[in-house]
Length: 489
Image (cartoon, rainbow, N blue to C red; front, side, top):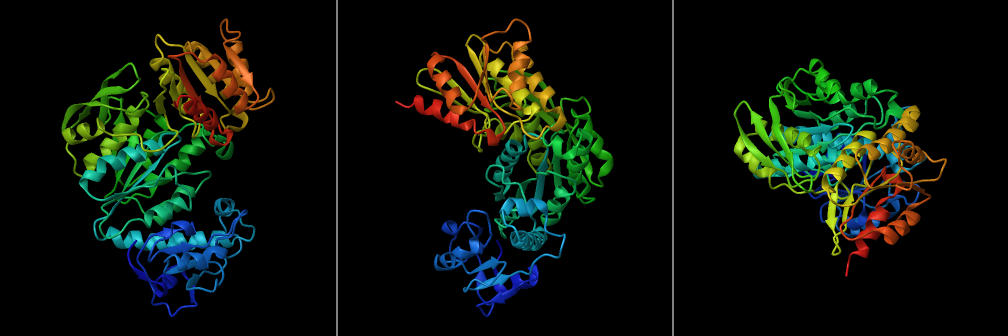
């Protein structure tokens, strides 16, 4: 973050300085965990259901914080922000902090104002903000973009999927005068959410990956999801760039919604940054020819799954816009690593059992991609798909889960283990598989992660390949972790 006094911060966010003359300088990072605060940092006193950050304010200052951003005086140097006017406490902010009076939303709103000020100051000094959205693949693509841009200059990107009203400004405030690229993942659970994030850190390059079924229960339809995702390209300036996946018609249609120049990516013949001659190796790692107007080059990804090709094309388009050559992009893509956990994390145990831990989240599109990856990786080996509920699908839930079960059969997956009770949202996966073809014992419904782990421990054989995937709240990562621990000598 750029250096600012408490008085300057108070002016920016509309707060007042307490227990200080306002001259203390914030020169370090912004943190909401008092255990992570460093010298010169700014501590966010966020109220919540389990703990109120205001009670840790003194501890944060004693650890070196220059001050606190708070909703009430805390007895140490602080910028105190007033409550938001009635009706302005964003429901996601209230849910995020877990408070009941909207004071957490007020602190988050102030944090957003501070991030906006800092980003606008840095943008005049050469900072480029890149926003990434889509129903799936946001985190992986954000990680790819960051790795391609780092050789071009200091780059800031969030850890994991830190993409909400807290993670977005928190990440933006990691940028300082040396930062050249700020890569931000942008999520939405309703109309207007992405537009609000774009106000906090105005992007010059916007990437839209796809429009799927994630959160369809909240939006009502894929068309409504597309409308929300397109808020990113609407926020771009005239001298900006919209990177759009032409293989998704709903994304391609967003070209008419932006003033920015459009760069199309995908396998579509009209794509400006295109993939041709895609080949998967025995570990489902794709290689392809990267084709652009400035030349072409062969790319060999170290990531597992053909779905990463589209992610890589979007990242390539951003890097090319910011000064990389085609050969540089191809070379860097061929050396990128998976940075975020529980996203197609592939580990082979000493006994040859391979675990595909993709348990961070799930929607119909990402589960289909994961099953295809499993099928490709397990040729000649026995395959297991351990699947749980895909959340927030609304009225489409039963059909979507049924279709996934049937797809597992059509892909010749050896065994399907569905985690959930008979009346759970996940159960139709088991019933769909059981009614597709001649499957019988190949599909089993188990009540919880402990039962799934016990079944796998009893029946896994050396050389088997196991995919573990569900929405995060299903906690199927417990199964993956247990199987990995079993493989430690």
